[in-house]
Image 1 (cartoon, rainbow, N blue to C red):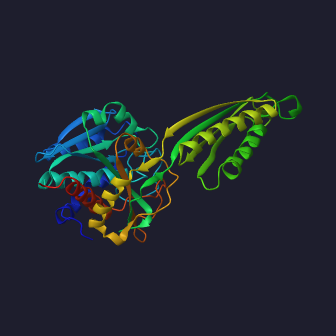
Image 2: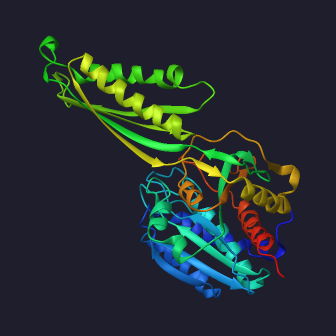
Image 3: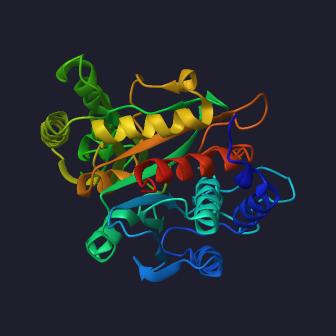
Length: 390
């Protein structure tokens, strides 16, 4: 692959940085060590740094030439609240925290691109290196935007990368339109009437009510949403009771909804509330639904997807760039950046035999370090393509 030779020469450094970040995972809005490491590297390469956006977020700005055109490159820095099962030397040193989604690799790829561009400056314009906190549920992208990210650091377009264990190493996907789903969460609080388990006729059992609701909600995706649309409704938690011989007074159901269009998102939310409340009422109980819209769909802009595909083809070859692919039903808060500015979110395959093929969010996941110079080369190629020397 035509990885930029200068970036290939950084490989030992890139791997060292990635392993260090992996061993010291930090949760959303707590990425103090990671943020400090990134800021130190950027400043050492002569890149201006502004820290403090969304708490631990930061932006590096690099200028070359005279053009006012600007491009944003984004990486997420946070880890997941999960226990790592790996036993290699760079495994998490923080119990209950793990880089299980590859954000350690995303951060390192952008650092590699920043170093290369700072050393070569073979572009005419402005590059914004956006290191974002709290992608994993905290909506760090939206917080940065709300705090003035693009007013303080204007860009004409913004791009991001995610590793993809479902694609072989050396392939990548750049697709116009929806690539990730909207991610919503809900809680259903049920109130019945507690009592003795031996006298259920004198109680209103929220466990039975909850069971009916769980089954009824399955009909939303299978019978109410158009089969040509996409919707996922998963109930993932059911909490009730404290004793074997007591019918509890209350219960709570929790879960997530994933959709690809605002119309289906509205439809599923309305049906969920209606079915939960009416089913509870039919059993003499009360259901209170708390529905939270978290991340909107991640929708790539057509023109920017074309530009990203051209740049990626320089690195992995045009035959390895996938242009048509079904969207993932996973959520991604880069969606907020794509609502604010034109841009594109690409996927880079990392599966190579036993390396890189374990799913994200799995306790044995690890980022494939062979991807580091490839991702850094893509970012660098994109900047040189979009901000060409005059």
